[in-house]
Length: 467
Image (cartoon, rainbow, N blue to C red; front, side, top):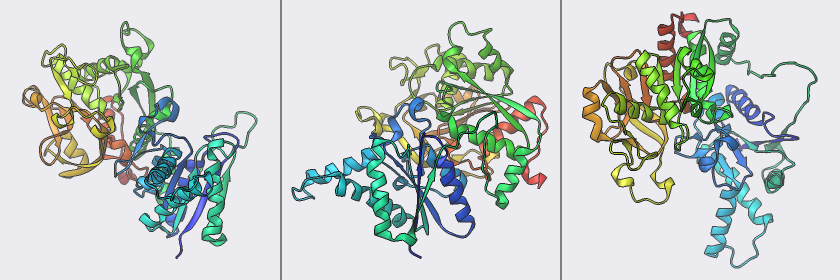
C-alpha cells in the first residue's frame, strides 16, 4: 500500500484542537487496522522547543530517542500509543538550518536559494522521512499555528505541492476551525468509540471518591507546562476508581513569610504532594519547604526529576545536618553539593551536550516501593536533565534512611530514591509522565495515588478488578 497523507491545518485562532483531532483520528485509523504515524510541523524559527520558555510554549515532550519536541507529540503518543521519533517534529529553524548548511557546502552549485523550491523541497523531504522511517500506511501531518500566520506560508505551499507529488488519492486535507458558541455551554470533548477507550471514558463519568494533590511548580499559571504530569495523574486516578483535584501551587509563594498563607494551607491539607521537573533557581526554596512538610508529616510525596533532586537536598539539610546542602545548578559554591554535574560533564560549554535525553535503563532494588509498583526487575524510562545525584553522599544518606531503589545498570547513576520510613516518599531522576497512557497508566503514578488513598482513608479499586 502506498503511503497516504492526511494534512491538518487550523484557522482563526491557535489552540482550536488540531493536535487532539490528529491524535483521535490516528487512533481511529489504527483501530481499523492501519499502521499510523504523526508529524508536527512547527513554523517557529527555533530549532526545537528544548530552550523555549514554558510560559510561551508549554511542556517540552521528550521522545524515546531523546528528541525535545512539541507537546502535541504527547497527545499523539497518549492517544495512538505508538512511539514517535525525531523526524516527527520539524521546525522552520531546522528547515532553514539544513538548507543553509547545504548552501555553505556547495550542494546547490552556486544557485540562488529561494523559498520555492529549496525551502518547500526540504519541508517535503522531512514529511517523506516519516513514512520512510516508520513504514506507516497513513501519515498524519499537523501544521502548528493558523493558516493566517506568515511563518506558515512555506509549509502550506509544501502541502499544496504534496498533492501533485503523491497524487490526489494519497493526500487528504482537514481544516480545524473555531466555532464560537454563545452562552455557557461547557467544554466540548470528543472520545473515540473504541473498546479500550470506552472503558476509560465510562470510568471517568462515574461519581467517585475524591483525593486532592498539591502540585508545587513555578509555571503553574500555564498548566500546559505540566500537561503530561496532569494527564498521568488522571490516568492513574481513573485506573484506581477515584476522582482527582489538583491544586496548582506557585512555589515562589511558599518562600519568605509563607506560613499561614492560603497556598500553604492548600499544601498542608492536601492528600499528596507532587513536585515536577524544571530548570533554574526561581522558586526552589518554596519547593524544598513543600518537600520538608511531606517528609515530616508522612504525606505521600512524588518527585519528578528536579522533584527528586530537591528531595535529596532537603534530606541533606535536615537529616544529615548540612545546612548549605544544595545542587550546584543553584549554588556552585555549596560545601555539600549533594546534586552535581558528573565529572565528565564539567567544562562543556554547550549545555545541550551535558543533557541526558531519551531512554535509559534502570535496575530496581528488590523489596522497595519502586520495585513493588513496577512489578519487574528492570525498566526503561525517558530522561531530560543535566545534574545527577552526587555519589559521595550515597553511603551517608543510605545509613540515614534513604533507599536508592533504582540505579543505572553500571551502578553509577541514581535513578530512583525513596525513604524507608515513609508511606510513599519517592523521587525519580527520569520523567515517568512521558510514558503514561490512558489505557496503560504509569505504575509509579498508580503507586503514588494508591498511597494517597491509603493515607487519607479513601477507598479505591483497580480497574482490572472492576471490569
